[in-house]
Amino acid sequence: MKAQVQALQKQMQEQQAKIAEMETTTTVGGGAIKITMTGDQVCKSVVIDPEFLKDSDAETLQDILLSGFNMALEQSRKLADENMGFLGNTLSSLGLNF
Image 1 (cartoon, rainbow, N blue to C red):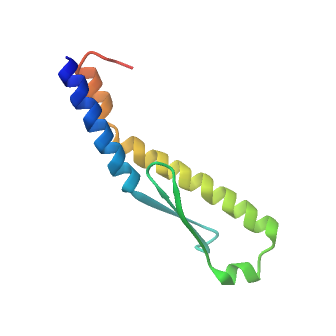
Image 2 (cartoon, rainbow, N blue to C red):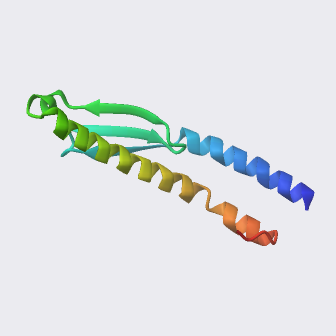
């Protein structure tokens, strides 16, 4: 069983490294703002269309950015969950139900 747990730990670490390289992009404000985040919840970029800034005030920008970051974070977590799904089945097969 110890060898199985060690193999599982290695597999988890490898999968976490892959997830850290995956990216998801969220678009908000009618396409004016794009936020890219990795699977391990690191923000990689924020792109704001300069035209959007001409017609927006600070409060509108803040609201849209807040919404965008929350959506990007949710997508990033979902991406990680989807790619770590194998873990539950593997733990169950070892008799380790969580």
